[in-house]
Image (tube, rainbow, N blue to C red; front, side, top):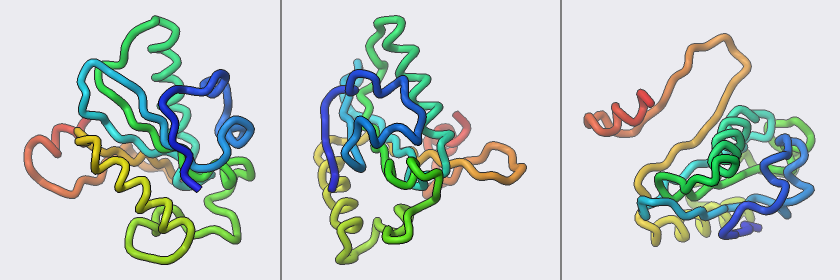
Length: 157
């Protein structure tokens, strides 16, 4: 269920979220090199109707590609629910919510989450960021799991 690749497929950065399924066979983890080796893990499209994270990451990666610049830090990008994104839905009727698969369970989605976590454990992740958006009139916000100064600084970025 989890596709793991080491480069951006040709044409990916020209796609809208609803088109990602045309190049990606399903949830995909893309490892990209950068000057700092410990990767930043970023997840987008855990909910198929929350496309803001994909747009932000796509545009950032495109700007580095256009300038022929190396990323300042390795990046491991998880592009989640491409099938729900195709339909513009949070999730499909036969799917679990991708926000709810990170605890033990027996579903294919739970297995994929364990596979992804195992993959990232071996890479010495610098930080993990899960990008979401919502339809409410809210200010930008960040949720953190630790109140130490370095976590607070990251949340302010």
